[in-house]
Image 1 (cartoon, rainbow, N blue to C red):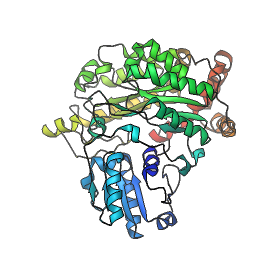
Image 2 (cartoon, rainbow, N blue to C red; image 1 turned 90 degrees about the vertical axis):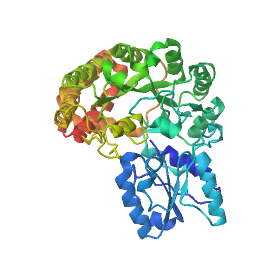
Image 3 (cartoon, rainbow, N blue to C red; image 1 turned 30 degrees about the horizontal axis):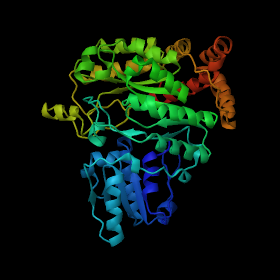
Image 4 (cartoon, one colour; image 1 turned 180 degrees about the vertical axis):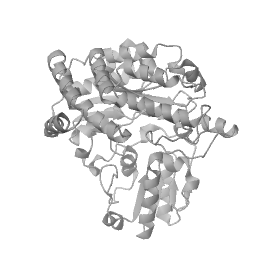
Length: 463
């Protein structure tokens, strides 16, 4: 996805400013780009910390001043004194203060505020600054904040516990701007929990989205992050499907009820998590999920239970990570008080086999068990078996499919050549392709998607 924060900030800057955006996820930053600029605006996530340090050194070497904001800098501003101007928290509040001081020639080093802005003032992102062909999905934001207070999460520190929403007309305007910019394909709703205000969704937003999608002949498909209690609301799931949603990310975290109680994961407690995931699949959603290992209640039997849960769920993309305590989370505060914090910083990389806490379980069996889970769920045979299980659970929405661009066709032929001929996945790939062709032909695009995913996971985890 494109860097939605920077694209939105770009729309808040003076119209007369010339702007150029370089997304280092998809392109290289050249010295000529830095030399071109008067100021370099930087936003980053925690996982991009090392890249940021290199960027700071390059900009200062070339004599350019840096303006920085976003999650990394807001969480740990004390680690970035060498940055010229830190514009922290939410830009609707702090950026105008910086711009006003810049205009008078007296900008300060630090701008911060606990005030939470009204999102009706947030402008449409500057889509013209990116090359859309670099992305598999666009992103828009409906809300900020989360009503839940999971111990391991720092979202409410960054955005508050009261969820602030954009109005339906504002969301439709952003969809229209994407459409007019030429985008056709996936759009991710970049919210921490899309379904927190169900009455607003049912009465206002989803009917408006459905009407717009019908008018524009369904140019997009939507994905959102939701809590698992969506499975309790058949009406809401039906309305989401009718509005064009087909993908969900769910924080399942763990099938262990004691660990869910420990981390205060309220929506997940006291329910059949497996049945909830399958129900969402049966309604027409592709469910991706996050899982965590290393809770205080975890023991050496936890790993096999998690492997079994993922295997039976049909959740193909299972994001499994070790428990970390981000600064600002209640977990960070608790473990610091218990003397169980190794460092304030987290790596932010789910594949790094690292944690910044002292777990109750010895670290050696925890890491070994974590590696065992990854090896099991992403090894060739169990992975393809899980894909087939998903195919059996999943009932795709009955609507006109989006038109496939040439690069999709190109990807299909490359997959058949590279994976179907040269990779050791090839036997399982062809078996799944033939099974799907005769049993579930509407799911053929997923065969190619998940075959590519498997190669990626194998590279990342060294399988």
